[in-house]
Length: 360
Figure (tube, rainbow, N blue to C red):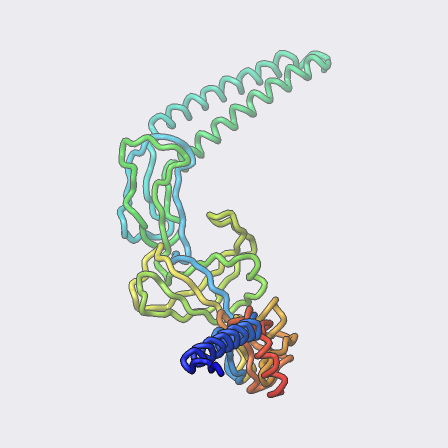
């Protein structure tokens, strides 16, 4: 009788066991892969617990320091500057002369215009004397009318030249100071478009901000505001809305905005043209339910955690800040909402679904 060699039997047994182990491992791998397909990564889901807190709705805009009043001075006619009395920082009073044009040419032109007027006036008198005893025909009427119009034009020329002489000197319309040194000097020829000097009032400066037209409807006079200036990065200036411009302006980017004025009361040396930003408080509420802005989906939904699952819920919003939004209805105190990882909420592997059913 032949017997199987024990060594050979053991070798066969090992092969069978190894095959079963391998097959089992393969089956387990398949089950694991299928069971974990589309698995939810819970570590990516960030949650926030709803609690009452204070919230402020604000509007932020950029602007710069400007004088309460300012005037850019020009001559009303072209000419040559005879003298100018302006220096940066110089104090001036309302009505004080700043600069004057050379009027020698204007005086001669005025004299010439007066001579022309006298000539035209004499011609008119001669015309009247010539035709005073003749029948008043249409032709005579036209001759007289032309003479009268010529005299009227001469009168206007004289008046215009006289005004040019009177306005050859520019004066400050306000009490204040010269903003910058002049760029023209005696002997310079200037045009009516040339700026001779800029005068700023010496009262308290103002901060002027350009508020976008989409936000202007939220603003009211006396609303509190906090102003930050680039020149003083560690300081905040408290102010309030003093004036809202009734007419829109176009910004450098082509947008429509309204100038909003804030009075500045500070011991700091505020200089004209300093840039900064303002945060205007348009609403305040205490002890209200609020959640981070990032929790809002499609402007009116939130995801609320319910046990092991998540529920999409519609909410009503109240006032909003840059970071938070008041929830008037839709969620309750101490509920938990999702603020990140929304792409994971709809995911669930077979194992996670089974686990959810068991724990439900």
